[in-house]
Amino acid sequence: MAEAIETSKTRRVYLTLRDRISSGELTPGTRLPSEPDLAELHDVSRVTIRRALAELEREGLISRRPGAGTFITARMIKRPIVADLSNALAHLVEMGRSTDVRLLQFGYVDPSPEVAEALKLDDGEKVQRSVRVRIIDGEPFSYLVTHVPQRIGTTYSEAELGVQPLLTLIERSGVKVDRATQTITATLAGPDVAEALGIDIGAPLLALTRVVSDVKRRGIEHLAAFYRPDRYSFQMDLVRIDSGGDRLWSPVERLRMGVGLNGATAND
Image 1 (cartoon, rainbow, N blue to C red):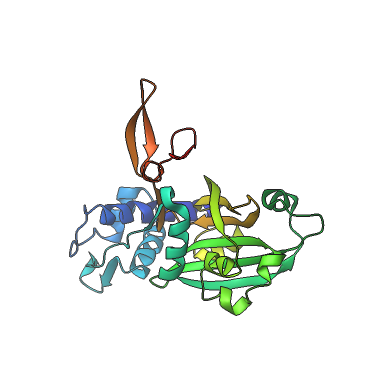
Image 2: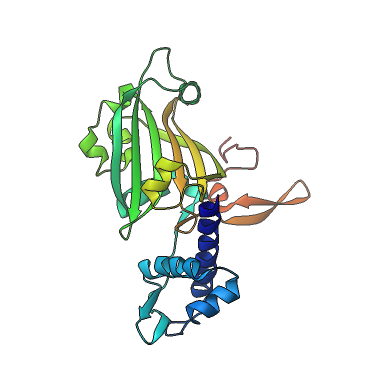
């Protein structure tokens, strides 16, 4: 229990100082107070301060100079990847091309009832299951678990999945990707995810579940994704429109595609 409390205090101090650096409150070249002063300021032990400073130094945000003190470096926190929710499928392919991937697991398994229902699989149909970690600038930011119907999964190899975006491989098989339904929530990191993303067990994560369908509304991919919130965020552009006398918000991409609030296209 005492160790868990100490870990929580360390993270609190680390995040507090990190936020002050990110916001520009602590500018490059600024000298931090001494360890005893920081311990008193944050009401923690010097051991906690040392651990928090060690994490900041590992990220390149501070430098500790013997006899001189601890200084904010010129390196700023990397900007997180921003996902455009209004154009999700295009973003998925682009992200696959602009980031690196580490393939942790690849195989064929019986799907869980949840996955089988989401993909509308036939009884006894297996799925190709993979676990991947996406990396940008040498640092992991997402943990991805995907299930694809076996009839599609057999069209690509483990080696190909390690270097090409999954949607590209699916489309190469002749499948016409049409739409995706996704749910975004928050969760806490379990042991496997925490280890893969380099975070503490129980750290907060963004969680996304996405089901991709083809033009016949058949499920072709089930994705469970976990993102580090300090390195990934979701964005949607909205515009105010008139609808029956009411002023409503509508996604910009939906208007560009000529889709009304009831989902009907401009040609209907």
